Amino acid sequence: MNFIIIGIDDNGQQEFTREILGLIASHTVFSGGKRHHGIVRTLLPEGYRWIDITVPLDDVFRQYEGHNEIVVFASGDPLFFGFANTIRKRLPEANIRLYPYFNSLQILAHRLVLPYHDMHVVSLTGRPWHEFDRALIEGHEKIGLLTDEQHSPDAIARRMLAYGYDNYVMHAGELLGNEHERVRTLTLEEAKENTFLAPNCIILQRTQARHRPFGIPESDFELLDGRTRMITKMPVRLLTLALLDLRERHTFWDVGFCTGSVSIEAKLQFPHLRVVAFEQRPEGERLMNVNAARFGTPGIEAHTGDFTAADLSGIAAPDAVFIGGHGGKMDEIIRRLDEVLLPGGIIVFNSVSAESRSLFIECAARHGFRVTREHRLTVDAHNPIDIIQVQKTTAHE
Image (tube, rainbow, N blue to C red; front, side):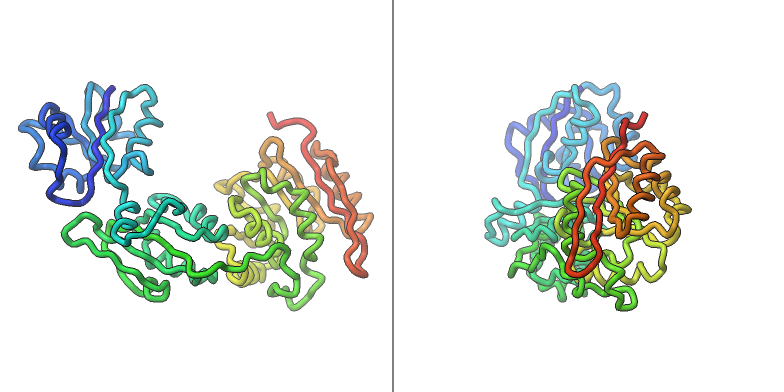
């Protein structure tokens, strides 16, 4: 199957080259979004067939079957989070000829006369917040965002302000290329109260660097009833993260998060991680919300209730787990973790006594895990803490 993909903007008077006009005139099967159809309709030859690109895409590709060559109209650069990538994934053997236009973020940068070679780009179109949260924590100077109805500029501004990222201004481009085009530069406070014409895209430009601590003092967290004993001390926390090997991991579970200190430190230092946290105490939800907002770590997925009875279906499987508390159910917790832990995954536990150390190692061994690393650490006048890493002795079937 052969595809000719032509990039366009929202201008109702497209200025195509002679080559592209010739391709349009010599073909009969065309495809694109409804908006694209409205823009190019008058240029299409008599008797043409148009295939709308709508979800589910399986229906679209079924309609493509039986046609040798299709001309597709797409927004901007079809390789920039665009439909050309979808075709390459679904039909890797297809031949593609590409005629790109500027993508929307390029057009917005052009309108602003803003150099964009150093811009970090994230698409939120039909995607979760994860990569945007990562970009915020990493503190990129310019962040270009492709939006949708759920991830609108005002929703983005509200999320940023909720987590303390008030160190950006927002450049919004609405209906770029259209006769009703609008480009505005707003503070986040202004943006959160505004409405925006769709389609739109935005560029966030940093006004100042935000402090990103490495090793948060425990006194800076909101604590459970003010009890300093109910938080993993900063030196222990950092060594725990080292044994979790999080730079090479993808999904981290924190079982028994209490104040959320380990989850928050993990997200802050390794923002690529998907972090899922579990806590039995109902107070944990408030503590996680308060502390995550305080330290600028959006995106931590928190669950409260008994972990051993929790519905884990639909939650991303972990390749690293920290057990911060077990409530007398160590064996049940490890059994459940064994059911979901990805091959090569590890579990780390901090033991405050010889009894808890023996319990963890015995329960881990019962489920096929062996100790792979162990460190002992004493902080100030506190009792020594054993930080223990275990891993499955054989890969899951």
